[in-house]
Amino acid sequence: MPSPNRFWKPGYVYHLVTRGNNKQIIFREPKDFQQYLYLLEEARKTFSVLVYNYVLMNNHVHLLVGVEENGDVSKAMEHIGKGYAKYFNYKYNYVGHVFQGRFKSFMILDEWYFFACTRYIDLNPVKAGLVNDPKDYVWAGYSTLGCGRRGIVRLDAHDLYCRLDSDPVMRQSVYRSLVFGDHYKDLDLLNRRAGSLRR
Picture 1 (cartoon, rainbow, N blue to C red):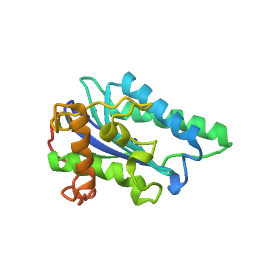
Picture 2: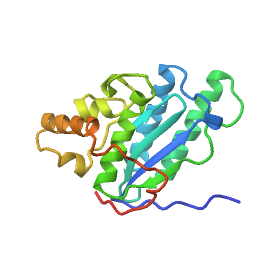
Picture 3: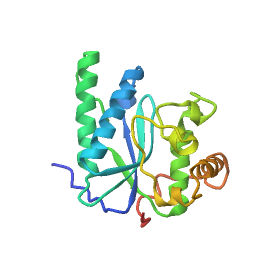
């Protein structure tokens, strides 16, 4: 039986999670991370998806996204998933599923959850022991949001992020303080599945 269609509402924000099949490593070297990000940027433009933040770990991905009018997150993720699986299978002579089923999606509830979620994404590499500071992890959006650096994926600035300060440098400073502060430390992904945060 086919899975039911998901409906993506313009103006809402979603936290997406996709994992390697059976928790396998899906990014083995820098070119693998780059390939996924190229596909993400391609999908962002093709399917009118807004990318607010992301992190690529060795066996899973977190994305914080929205959609414009007529945008489709499902088609974007299908484009990325099929494209990356084809790349991965050819490169590593691998047979079988690369990703573990459909990606999971959580609609962001409110302002608190937005910043708790983006902080959770930013600190993934730190909690995994890969870096001491998230700015040193290149396969993530933190260096753009917190330091103003440009990456392969052009991040879209959510209104909540923009409202941190009108000056970009000060905005980045405030954002860094949010990531390293304690106010947004508790994030329960299992119990926050729906909500009504608008752009």
